[in-house]
Length: 250
Ligand SMILES: Nc1ncnc2c1ncn2[C@@H]1O[C@H](COP(=O)(O)OP(=O)(O)OP(=O)(O)O)[C@@H](O)[C@H]1O
Ligand SMILES: [Mg+2]
Image: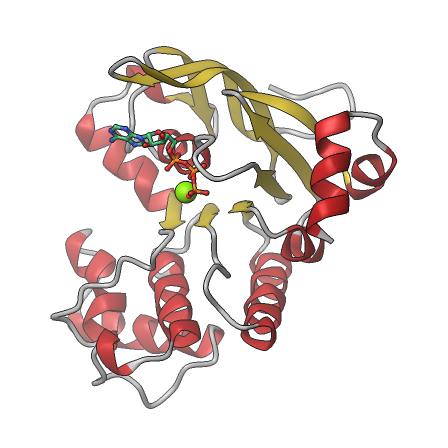
């Protein structure tokens, strides 16, 4: 699909609905994320931001609606095909989700080994290449418990980059970090995106971080995307909730 302005949505979500028992979390989400852009999804805690991200790489199945990634409708895919989607759409989980019993090296190597990406020597090279991208060297043999919060996030980011994804989904990449480390991680997200050119979706409730990394912004509220637009459009919006979000968060 090509839109009128010639940009191709890499991710296209239509009428996405998802409930857990009686709790309706997503109630008809419509969202396009164009190739190569960074879309920030804003929203209060518990609004369903993580649930939305998990639909984009097939970790959750919709009750209704459609998620199309790189031209493929995920609803039609089996587990093996979804596994291929997860190779090209990687996720940096909200709490890092590193394996505590594995070293930094083995954590980053994990997806490469899992997907039989290549021989041991190539895996070793790739692990070091992505660790360098996130400015981590000499930490191969450390365990997650020995790392600072910011280092953990960077290892999680390196692991997400290992398979050369076409899109990266970040779930709260800076939560729990101090302002300086937050700034550093945001710079890293920005520079990796411009260097490698992949499509990004960043979930956050930190508006300062949002403006630093985002090209476009969407506000999830009561199960729907209530507003979406550029930074300029966010600043000049008449949408009351978006305005409230901007004024209280800055
Ligand atoms: N597997 C699940 N089973 C039952 N309920 C779930 C499940 N996953 C999410 N939920 C519920 O869905 C709602 C949205 O959760 P979600 O984690 O997406 O929120 P969020 O916007 O990411 O919040 P936060 O900003 O705190 O991370 C919550 O009420 C949560 O309890
Ligand atoms: Mg969440």
